[in-house]
Amino acid sequence: MTYRSILGVAAIVSVALISTVVLAGCESGVDPYVGTEEPYTIWGVFDAAADTQKVRVFSIEGEPGIDRPSAVDASVVSTNLSTGDRVEWTPRTVTYEEGETGHVFWAPFRAQSGHRYRLDVTRSDGNTSTAEVTVPTGVELEINTSDTRSTLPVRIVGDVPNLLGVEVRYEATNMPPDLVWPPGTVAHPLVFHPVDISYQEELNRIEGGWQFNIQMQRDYDLVRREFERNCLVTNGAPGIALRRVELRLVAADSTWSPPGGAFDPEVLVEPTAMSNIDNGFGFIGAGHVKRLRWTPPRETRLGLGYSESRPCGMDAQPIPACMEPPIPCLGENPLDIWELFF
Image 1 (tube, rainbow, N blue to C red):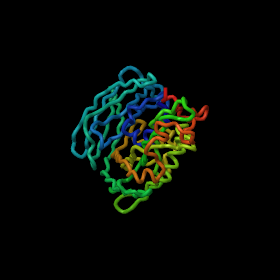
Image 2 (cartoon, rainbow, N blue to C red):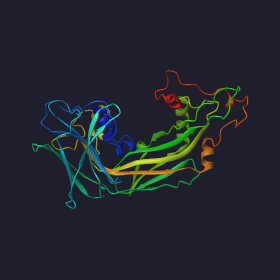
Image 3 (cartoon, rainbow, N blue to C red):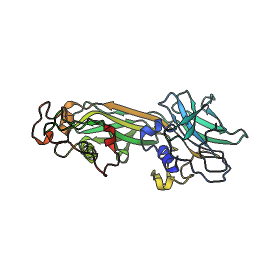
Image 4 (cartoon, helix red, strand yellow):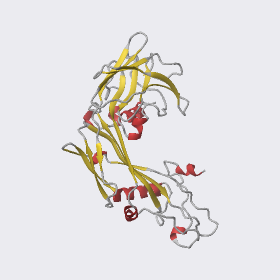
């Protein structure tokens, strides 16, 4: 795992990453300072919305913290400093798709709001890396999902220091015709292609929480352009069906505080730029993952430009929506979605 990819996890670029913070595949070793006396690099989150807590531990043994196939020399214990409860974490070796081995420690408990936790990762010689975090209070999402307006006000009620990874996901598919013109042309496949749009920069702090507006008409234009970019629809027949919308965010503790207030990869690539590990490297955060899913009313979907049925039906017609379907984006498609078809 490169430092850049790990810090992408630590910065909660997306809420999806926080739930898989220690289980995602990685490319190469962590790169802390060579020759350091610190024993570990640690990444993880005390997630109040999860029943199981996980951290990933990299040992530092003479060379940069590269994961090794053998068991890591570490014991992990967490202490709820608010109650005194101690929990020993269980080690697990994970093999990722790339063949790399990772060392994950897990414990079956739910982090409690307002409680402070200490995580101790100890080597057999007694050398220990430690982090302390306080789980913030939870938040409630206030949004009228039956509202037919294209602009949806959102209120996030709760006194939390940080909101991170605020995104709206549009779970959409293309709507290829059953038959196309001329007869015998193979219809374009139906593909599920969710589009994530960040609202992190549109948050406004208000008394008792936060607020922002979901701009669904603007977002539809972004979704349509993304489908066109990946050759899933054409300009003449942008048939896109909206299956569901998901609002995602993390209510996070105050330790998520990058230099200058921005999660800049060029700054965070420095090992100690945003680290709360005592006698080690990495980052342990705390927070609540919040998700809300809904399907907008039919009136809203159609008004925005989404489709509800396939064009042409079972009768091929010489009209733009039924003409020869899109072809792969040759040399232009960074997501290579065409591979999903075969």
